[in-house]
Length: 484
Ligand code: SF4
Image 1: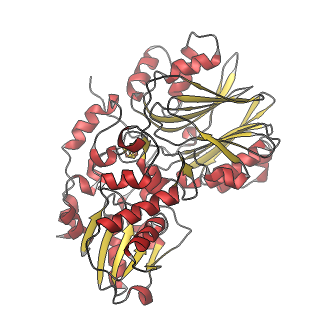
Image 2: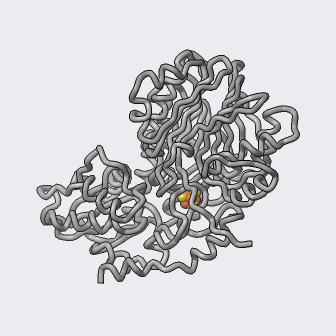
Image 3: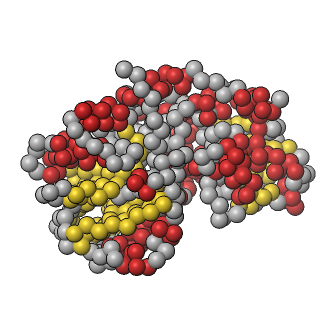
């Protein structure tokens, strides 16, 4: 049987807290600091002495909770929250998390970040067995698997269910008496545990949320691990021994906030190191370094320090626009680039500029920024990218599942240089990336997933195997046609 693998891409943010008199308010602040991980929708589910209460909607966290009453009604000493990543379509409130499942004998809340690679198979099996799905998200699958487990203890049911789902995932479950946090066997997504000054246990996709609420970091969840959080504190357990750290390298390159620390490495420092290494791999003469705000500023500072070239603010970002990566149509992406950046003529005029950016996905943004710099009078624009060429799709939770969208999939570096109109184009090497992030681990690829760059996926692709093989045949030559 053949079937289309549908795009269910999420790179969302999770936050949870147990043991705080203002749990929902703290979760609101936590979600605020995770807003960069998803702007399509947000929700909070609180636990008021075993009664689960929820508010969710589409929009930014501040929009979803613009009426203070929406937050005030979420009483209780525990809460979990979610910010959802924007993808084309699927903007219905039904897909906004946390989900709230009610049964005759119990209820639980569930929030999820990532993408399962065996969704179709599991969904088909579950539907053949009578399950009914109420959203297009694959998050519900775990709930069905938990309910169908014949184990008696709830944590054992969860463990059994986790062994059936494959791919990249982080889950937060809330029951009457506990929160359970779980991470996939490769730890593709970050998930950290912390503690507030009053002893409440918190869990967050990124440690930047801990700073905001005055919590201290306790530790990161390991691949294949569970954290069970209740009135007695936090306990760690595992559901599989078949684990191998392969955290998504794009978390360091692009997604996470620079003040977050993932597996002991600060994101800003990792980016700065990529910039340093990039400067070593760069072979052109230039006058100034200009980072593309905001996610490339750290790499630009590293490039500047290593090369000795001054780091100048030649590009200014309007802080109040959304990131181009998440705009679902080409027209909106182009519009997004126009709205959000300006080149500073008095800085770049007559200069040979090294334009440092974190990545090139479709090439649209880079081409536009190179043009902005030229229009502002730059004598030369040398583009330096603080990551290797993006050539392969991601099936673990990032919104690129087709090589058609990746300019590097079918074009040489020099062709890309022509397309974006640069004088030179330098990408960071894969070894340079791995060494720059420098995780302390014996795991392959320095504990990172670099499948985006080398096509070597750390797990079987299950339902996506056919989609992947098909994607290898896809051409992106329309990019070159556009500029001819
Ligand atoms: S394929 Fe790329 S985006 Fe996906 S998890 Fe691996 S490194 Fe991250």
